[in-house]
Length: 460
Image (tube, rainbow, N blue to C red; front, side, top):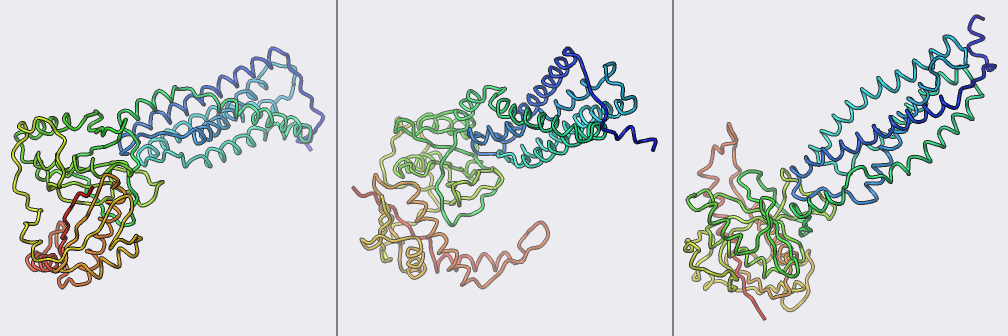
């Protein structure tokens, strides 16, 4: 009976215009402050994406607006708590005693204490978001859920005092927040267009080829090189600097002049799928001239895949000269060609049967177009110690078509060798192979049985 007055609906609320204006201003300042903070967190942890990704982090307009809206709605709800707390503060014409203190206490607890907790949570999630490169912000449902809970909790004390009379005010308050949220979301606090432009110049997005079979690339002793066409001229990106082919050659010569480390260095090439294979050959021959042995073409298994440094997949190849006049001036400055351990001698092919495979604008075998399944079946039937394959390319050959053929070829080799191996490796401490001698001998037998016998021929 003593609580009847508290739960009654006879209470009325009156306040001055000055109190309303000051409450609205305080709520807006709090909301804008939270919104700016959330936008700053997103901007700050974008740096982690740029470090762990092999491409610039560019958030598309639709996704950016969606993130901004979630930031805006939770910022407005927190600002709304400040608005209610200031509106019900003492003194005013409302004389509710303990009930007024209850409303004020709940708003400050939900706004100030929760705001402190929430900022810590956002910072922590932002950190892991940056480390995991979740550029599409997977925490959006969590932000929306927190906003709903905070909004409902904010009006719990008001409902206890005013009961049914408060529903109209709550719906009106909700309508105002929903109306303001897209307006706030349309405001970009930071000049992201300029930041995107700078990021793309330093770390451009590469549309690498998509293949069904690729190998995992080790994450050490790698040198990452990007290659794009600008005005039909290849441009190379290395260590956030731009080079043409001559400048890249000079860089490699300076970098590895007195070092044998380049023999173990793995060059990781990210090149657009539609780039001409003829341009790739120029880069390959440059690596050969400066004594690099390992080249990996980065690929994807689907278009939407992000390129992470610690999860690279690609087609691993060896560097050796390919027939095409190298377009580098001043050849005298280059070191002499080393004897390549990967290139087969001419006598090796003299005793083999040639299989011509045309890799141009389309993939053709025996003058017939073939799809990937047909090509895999043909490789499985033909690869042996008797045949070798001549990849015939022309000016229309794209990197995508070349890697499609090469990846299928390597997949067929793996299937054949795995099906014929006699010795499985036995691992001991520190992943050392205990039966290394027997395992290496068996691997050598498999290589001779199913050799990687490929020649390259340019055709007009």
